[in-house]
Length: 79
Length: 183
Image (cartoon, rainbow over all chains, first blue to last red; front, side, top):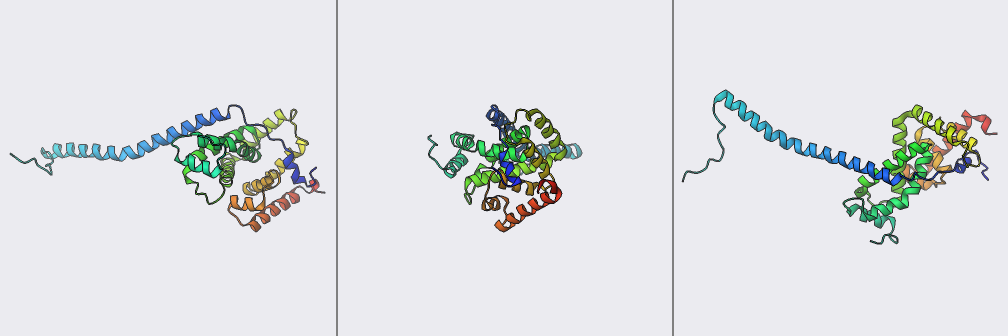
């Protein structure tokens, strides 16, 4: 028997977790993992994409302005 | 893998090595489903929010399973995550929404409630809403779940005397706000 009013808090009965708890948890976990993986893919792939796409765009602008391709830094040797 | 005789800490180390939710994590989930559910139900106050919070706790346990450094017991770590998750969810949802759902569920479940004195429990939960989220959580865990002050101190990252002071202050605050309930 509770003597303190606050001890009545312990008398509240806790229901069992819902039957579909595990199923819903796994669905939620899969959604979270998918979101994280898509985010990581974007964060890691974007810099690479911007670098390569940016170089191509800059090269195209340069060719438009000067009519010359960028000189290759390592020219193949003439045999 | 036979996980039945492994300690929580051994299973946690095994779960950290697993690439997905393998047998070790499944076993941990099995062991902590009930304690986590109890904490979430106590702190969130209704079944819908408790389910949401408990699932969020297990998602966080899975995502952060490699961060358990064994500085404390695994159960303390899990309880800490459960409590912080509930506090965050309660803060983010706001009290108005919580009241709407809780009131609806209380009305539906009141007839079938098996509690010794459900009206009193409901009144108490309403009274506790005047407290800050942290004080409310500490008071509930202390009185409803019989946590020791040492456990509370570890979970809330406070000193034992600090915990005692906060619980005592919260009790006084309730007693001053509702003097007719404390003869």
